[in-house]
Amino acid sequence: MTAAAAPHKLKREMSGFGGLVITLSGLSPSIGVYLAGSDIIHGAGSWVIGACCLAVALGMLVSGVYAELGSAFPHAGGDYTLIGKTLGPTMAIATLVGSLTGLPIALALSGLGVAEYLRVVWPGLEALPVALMCVAAVTVLAALSIRMNAWVTGLFLVIEVLSLAVTAWLGLAHPHRDLLAATFHPMMSDAHGALVSVPLVMMGVAGAGAVYAFNGYGSAVSFGEEVVGARHKMAWMIFGALGLAALTILPPLAGVIVGARDLAAVSAAPAPVSAFIREAASPGVAAAVSLGVAIAIFNAMIATALIGGRTLYACSRDQLWHPAANRAFASVHPGFGSPWVATLVLGAGGLALCTVPLATLIMINGNGAAINYALLALGVILGRRSGATRETRSRMPWHPVGPIVVFLAVLAIVVAELYDTGSGRTGLLVTALFLAAGALYYNLVAKRRGVWAHVDPDEEA
Image 1 (cartoon, rainbow, N blue to C red):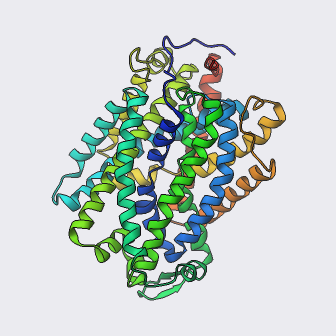
Image 2: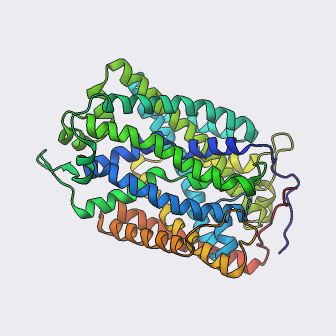
Image 3: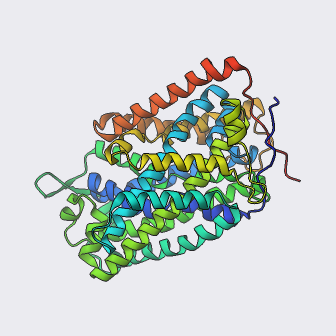
């Protein structure tokens, strides 16, 4: 297939380590602990450890899926490209709509989250101005060179890991219960503030939350055109991000569970991890940890803007939109080698969404990560059969058992979320609407114009 090429190409100048740093920053262990992990503790108590361990086990299989496909197609575009190359354009553009909507929403949500944690240090801080400044700053940074962004995110990542280490030490150094007992006999707070066993349904819902806590290791594939030796390095970038996420997320959560004096009170709190820190640390340490969390969220915003810009760049290079929009979004800065227009557009969307009520943003941002996992697993199976993935340097082991297990695990998560009449069911509905909108756009608009075609970048020498 042929299509009009962009006048400039993305610069292949980043090391595999740089790609790993940006990927881990986008995954954001702090978000996994202080936001997602805290929500799991609130809903399922000490089962947070079991849920996260199962999420890591599933992540090992999903990483194998991403590694095989990312090595076979080291292109910009992330899931959109991998699904398109194996399952075809309808499914690719169906998932793309959710990504292009969710990424600016994630920027707005994260900007507001930075403000919330900064309020611990500076009470009375207005959320909207802080969120706007954060989104504007990360958008400008993401429009610069990828190597500079790797250095910036790496510096912030060191601060993030230090705050996580402090949280882990607060609990593990002063235990009040046995970790194994709390994991294999999980307890949570009931409506009356007493410890009770975690119901099976809540364990399933917690599993979905744990998948979200670790989601992001696969975003390494978004930088396939900018990492030197990407076809060979993609596997260890993805597996490395997942492994480092496990090493930085599990110890702080274990510290909260074993170190909480009153587990029922902590799990009943709206933000259990923050409640534990206030209980276990001095006001100065609690403020320092909150500042570290704010920096971590800002760091994740940089990675989100980088991924979003490259996703919009890739589909515009494929001639998916109006010709004028395609030319603009597929342009690459001649000096920075970045998709600067696409990045600025995604950032502008994030700025506009900062003014939307927080509850509305959360409702709209249905998490489609698990659905993408299932589609990618199917893509590995079909890609092997069609020969589309023959150029990969990272064959997934246990094929096709591994992809089938991923598919069945996603099915179990979907069933669990259907039982959750709150955010779980709403998130699935929003994800389904995005998938339908993307599929309709391709079949009713792009396909009829007959100009969409995936552009394969030049093969690395």
